Length: 97
Image 1 (cartoon, rainbow, N blue to C red):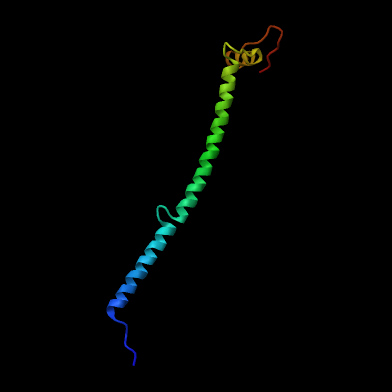
Image 2 (image 1 turned 135 degrees about the vertical axis):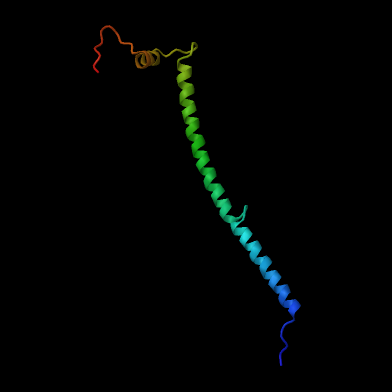
């Protein structure tokens, strides 16, 4: 006749199984788990794209600012801005609205 396992051994293995399940769950779902790492990578890529877009906008604004500065005056850009903002026209032009 076989003897049933001792109660202490059963409790010991239940505790080990519970700890194993806990650590497995933490490795997958926890704050530093696999799913969180994937989410962090996706968010990093999204933020890098946003950074690149904003850097391109900043470069455009800096270029326009430099072209309107006293060191480098772009007459075509100055003419365009005067027309757009102030509504200036040349005497020989016809304005159609």
